[in-house]
Image 1: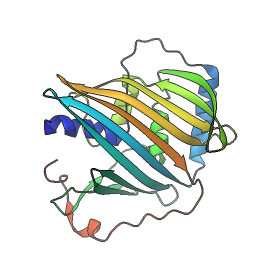
Image 2 (image 1 turned 45 degrees about the vertical axis):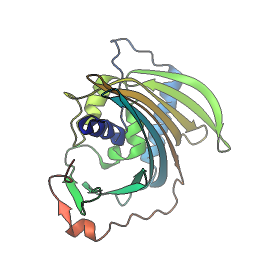
Image 3 (image 1 turned 90 degrees about the vertical axis):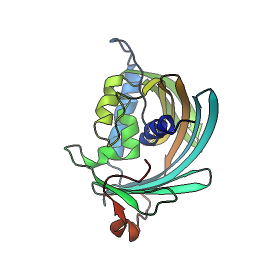
Image 4 (image 1 turned 120 degrees about the vertical axis):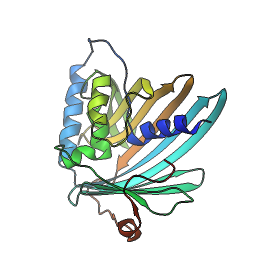
Length: 252
C-alpha cells in the first residue's frame, strides 16, 4: 500500500476526527442539544479519567486492500494538565504524552527518540483532551436524540451527530498535521452515550471514510471513558526530555 496514503489516513485516525459535507440546513433536536450541553458541563468539572479505543481501518490503494487494527489506551489529568496514551498496532506500541502544552510522541522502530512539539494558541487546555475534542464535533451540524440504553449497568442517553466540514476545519486548526488540501473525509457519524444521571461521557462510536484519488479507507472507532475522579499516573520517561527530534519523527 502506498505509504503517503496510509500516513494521511493515520493522521486523521489519530486526531479522532471526522466531518460530513452537508448543506446549510441541519436538524438539531432539542433533547439532543440539551444532553450535549449537560455532557460538556460535566467535563468542565472533571479532574481525571481514563479512556480506551478500538479502531479498525480497512484501506484500499492500488487495487490492494489492507486492514489495520489499533488499540489505544490513556488517561487524562486535567488538574496537572497532563495526558498519557499508548497506541498498539501489529504488536508495535507507541506512546504519547502531553505535559501542559508540550506534546511528546515516541518514534517508531528503528528510530529511537521522541518528536517534541509545542502547542501554542488561545484555546483552553481542556479543549485538547480526548473527550472534549470528540464532543466539540457535535456542536454544529445535525444532532439527533437516539433513545436510551444500558452501558455497563448505567442508564445512558444516546445522541448522534453529523459534524460539519467547518467544525472539522476549526478542530484541525488546533493540530499540527495538515488535513485539508490532502485527503477528504466523508460520511462521518459520531454517536455518544452519556450517563443519564451525571451527563458524563461513557462511550463514543465514530465512523468515517477517507479518500484521496482512487485510494479509500473506512474507519470505525469505539472509545470508552471511565474511572472519573480516580487517581491517574502520567509519568513522562526521562529519555523523552533528552533524546528529541524537533522536526518530527524520521520517516514520517
